[in-house]
Length: 131
Image (cartoon, rainbow, N blue to C red; front, side, top):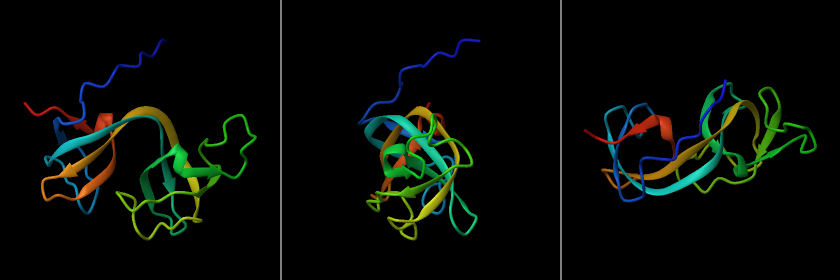
């Protein structure tokens, strides 16, 4: 089966409707303004306390086994090497070791909420153009 990569339909400056929860700041149905488009790998990780966090961009993580064929595959460990505070929880500090749950290529976005709060990362499948 062939899987096609579809180019993003949402661009910086567009308003987008959020389809998922990014607690505590974003709930389904919220409108955001897209600030920046990224393309690359997003990773969901398990934090040391067992909670799942989405998303870290792959460039924010340093895999423990950088020489593996697939260093960010599920079950492997990585260390957080970047956390600028925009969207990533403040309790996830640089140097935190996390377990990879899933990584995949996608388009993703930085956005500004209606209350002016900056948020990153919203994956392309988590937002839609408003009707």
